[in-house]
Image 1 (cartoon, rainbow, N blue to C red):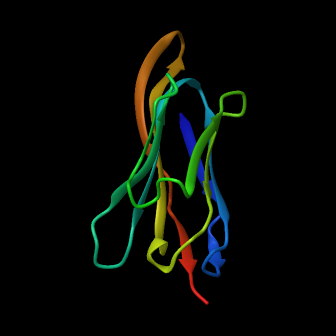
Image 2: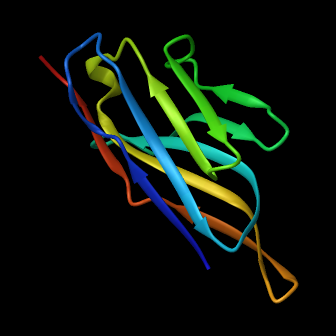
Image 3: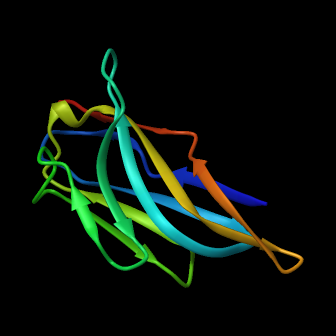
Length: 123
């Protein structure tokens, strides 16, 4: 079993910063993909940033230059550093992790979503 826990959201003023964390635990063999998505009220969920096990990183145009995605492989944890936050960044942010778990020598693919964490940018 793999568990995924998000943390780090909150209320911040425009121009401020927040760091989100996505911690995985359990019988993890690999984390091949970790992505951060967000969903604002009345809008579709969108991919904000993603990082692969090979180190490939992608950002949406709306956050490029302001957000940084990273991962700590020893801790099985991913991060989203968000700087220069704007009111339009307000949304529920979700972590998504995909990879393989291992149990009794057998590998199983997993695709987990976090519970979501609210980020509100307002003065």
